[in-house]
Amino acid sequence: MAAALLRHALDAQPEPLRSLEVVTAGMVARTGEPANDNAVFTMKKAGIDISGHVSRPLTQAMIDRALVVLCMTESHRSTIAATANPLPPNLWLFREFMPAGVEREIPDPYGGPLRAYTACRDEMVEALPSLIAALKGLPR
Image 1 (tube, helix red, strand yellow):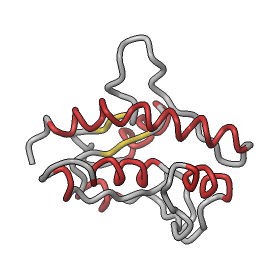
Image 2 (cartoon, helix red, strand yellow):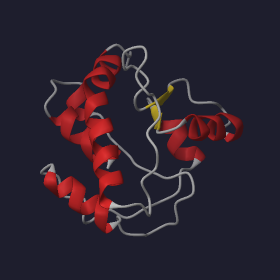
Image 3 (cartoon, helix red, strand yellow):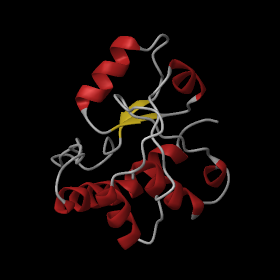
Image 4 (cartoon, helix red, strand yellow):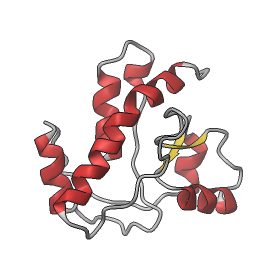
């Protein structure tokens, strides 16, 4: 969901942001699993089709190529920081740049009810303007 939302937001930006490649991978994902039905439904309600998505695990090669690595939780960030070599220079939470006092982590809705997926999507959508602003400030 995060990659599709970010890609959608970047499509509305001028270059060079519009041309950024968005790659998605999971911390404990198995290769080739389809998107959860609740995720597909939730994103369809937002006008984005993720029905063709298949999962894959995060690899060091992906990290090495990344301008930014985005995580949903501090646990994800800690795991990447402890295992990546070298450490990605821009290892951020998706909600890293939200105003002070706002929850930074986005709980994983996997296996939860539809309302958990909807809340997850809405928390990501809320973060997109601050995330896009941070991406604009990065050298390419």
